[in-house]
Each structure stands twice: as C-alpha cells, then as structure tokens.
Image (tube, rainbow, N blue to C red; front, side):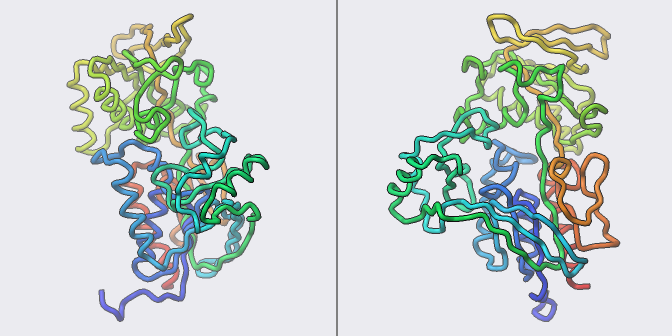
Length: 423
C-alpha cells in the first residue's frame, strides 16, 4: 500500500458491459491506477440493476448501488466511458490486444443539460424497451431517471419535421443530427467481458401463453410495474384493464431447468418471486399469492430466512408443482392454469387475475457471441481460462448469479486483468 507498490500506468484494460459487474470491474482496476475503457452498447450505464425496484440482500433501490458507483466514476480520470458502443473484434494476445469498437450516434453532445425541452416538442413516439414495451416514449428521450451519462438521446426513427422542432427547442446547441457512426481501434492489455444477461424469451414457451394473453407477464415486467419510474409509476395492475389483482400466481422455472429451453437453474428466479410477493403484499394486503415451484432454491441463511417469513404469511401459498398449461377465461381476462401437486398427486385447476412467469436468465453471449478468442459452454456462458489469461468473463457472462455474487466475481476479474498486465 505504498507509493513504490502502486500500479504502473503503462497498461490499459477494457471492460465490455456497463452493468453492475462491468462498473465494479472498471472501478476496481481504475482506482489502483490503471487506464480503463468501459464499453456499453446501451445509451446509459446501469444494466439490469437499473431496471429493478429493489435488489438483494438488503432490498436496496438501484440508486443505492449505482449512485455511489457513478460518483466514483466521475471522480476517476482513469476511466473513459463509451456508450452506444459495441466491440466488433478482438485481435492479439494477452498483454497486447487490438479491439475494434463501433459507436452509434446519440445526436446529442455534451452541452445537454437534461432540460427536457426537446421531448416536449417531439411528436414521434417509440416503444419503451426499458419497460419491456409496456408503454411508449418520445423519440427524444432520457433512457431513465438514473441514466449515466445524464444526456438525452435522439432515436433515428424521428422524422424530419420533428428534428427541426427539436433543434429549435434546444437552447444549448446540444442537438446535432450530423453525428455519424464511427469505428475505431483501442490498444489494451486485457479485456473483461461483463456482458450480462437477457430475460429468456417467454414467447418460446408455448404452453404458458405469454404473448397470447394480456394478463400473463414476466418477472422482469413485474419489476418494472413495481418501480416508481416504471410504466404505472409503481402501481402493480393488470395490463388488460388496469385492475388491482386480487389473486396472482407465479410459475417458477419458466424456461429454466428444461431441456427444451434453458437446462440449468437460473439461480435468482426463486428469490425474485419471493421478493415480488413482498411488493404485492405491500400494495394489496388482502391479495392471495400462489407460487408454483419445482424446488425452491434460497441459497444462504439470509435468503432462507426471507423465505421463512413469507412462508408464515397466511395469504402466500406454495404449491410444489409445475404449471403445465394455461388458458384465458372468456370475457374476464382471468387466467386458468393447470398444474399437478406433486406432494398430494392431485391435479390442480385454478383461476387467477394475473400470472407471472419466472423466466430465467440467458447470457447475452448466447444471443450475440463476441468475436474474440473465448471458450463457451453449451449454454453460452464464457468459460474463464486463467492459464491463458488476457480475456475474462465477469458476473452473469460467466454464470447465473445475484448482484452480490456478481460484484465479488467482478472484483476477482479486475485482479486477473491486472495480473495479465503485470506479467
């Protein structure tokens, strides 16, 4: 911890992905003296954590973890952030990589003050992917209230008339539609892929009706409904008629532990549903909640205690059985579900106001594989080869994990990247 032992500044590290794992990796490396390039494909940092209402283990809001990291980021001159950017190719060997990066235009420069005047005059609307398409937003938009950088984005779908209105409305000369896509190379000694995960596509699970029936949603959609900056400003309501649900069912392992979809356990789904039950209980104390599960996996004492508290709730019912089929009740929008109680052996038929599918996590690399010398397992997770070094995976790019585990892993990968440069 002396000046003589401080890290040299000759080497650089690239972190791909600006979610909680990527932020942790970048900050840990930068704060001991290394130059870090942080590459994020979205318009702002934060990843999946920014979409949550609360996260474990303390049920903190996203601001709790992200705000301090953004402050550390602002205070550290060793980190260069590239948003709306994607890695095209990684060439070279440990200690000496050339990474090709493509950056899409934001059409807004650093003069932006987030005054929002551009959004007021913009008439073009686009689907709000941050809320999983449950609402729409202007084509001139701030990604979300915790966006970093705090700067608006102009969607390319904006028409010519709207572009003129938006430019005229901006008092700070921040809107620039002459910006173009560009590709450039960066020289780095190590690359850490913190590319995160995607919710599994529930439309592929034919028997569970997602996409056919309005009142069947996914666990991440419920997370956005419960969030104060979500499409309903935190109110959990049925999509079909905005009704307060009186009965809600959760179908666990929706796509996970299934050889036809994701053969592995996604680690977080059981705890996510238990957390969602607390959201519902807080808003609707008399609502009945039914959780259909194969096995409830609550790793660790804290998570097990959390489960025990909900188990004692007289309005939360746990049914050991997988939901086999669903249908919609004519005229009401209610959901009929069929499951087998594996303890009693009885077939259960139940009607609920709303069904939530606990969809699993799929590594982003399974959908969009990086052009780099990486080894993947059958499910698309990156296998770390520490003997080779140079290229590493952190967080959910490496395995299904919660926020705490992802952060611990990210710190380790920062050290592995540093070791590559030191060698």
